[in-house]
Amino acid sequence: MSNELWFSQNNRDLSRSYGDDSGFEFEFYCERCGDTWRSGYEQYSLGRASGWLRRASNMVGGVTSNVGWDVANAAEGLATSGWHKARDEAFQRAITKAAGHFNRCSRCHNHTCDNCYSADRGLCLNCAPDLQSEVEQARAQGQVAAARDQAYSVGGQLAQDLDVTTERRLVCPQCGAETHGAKFCAECGTKVAGPETCRSCQSQVPAAAKFCPECGTTV
Image 1 (cartoon, rainbow, N blue to C red):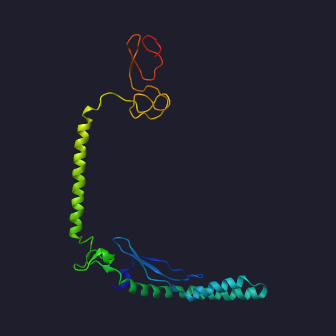
Image 2 (cartoon, rainbow, N blue to C red; image 1 turned 90 degrees about the horizontal axis):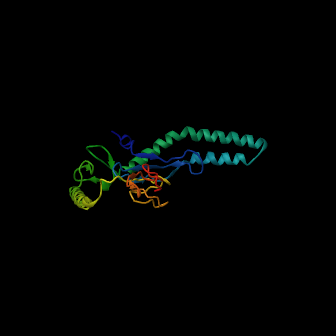
Image 3 (spheres, helix red, strand yellow; image 1 turned 45 degrees about the vertical axis):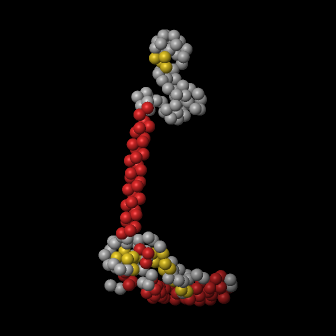
């Protein structure tokens, strides 16, 4: 298998076929960590020349302008026709250089940078993880899991004195503000914890009621 096929999946073409910055450049990336390496810019002379001629033809008028357009069009056609071949050759040169910056895993066949590759095993760190790193990660995960269990247990102890049977209003019926279970609304002062008891007949009065439904006494 050729290098070109090996690198067909982990590159980005940054080349431009026309204009002052016409040229070739390719970006390759590690398929594990995503770090990138660029091949370096190579000018595409025909593309630059066609851009110059196009601008020059716009600056003159009359018959000279028509001649200029013909010359510019011819140059642009020549640049376009030669672009793909020139691009393929530049890509192959870039691949040759990129091969020195990436390693091909013998198991998953991904291309990785030196930091993500175990040269002794010929495998990337996804296929052959660093043992000490895995141990440290497992240790940290164990500490987090134990801390969560401990916090869960403490939370259960703290909740022993919490009133969980009384129904609480979470939204004030008067202004619609959130109450978070408080007895009074922090926005308008309306009492939202209920039910209340009528001071006249001692009957229960629904929250936010203005009169006792049993005796009509003002709440």
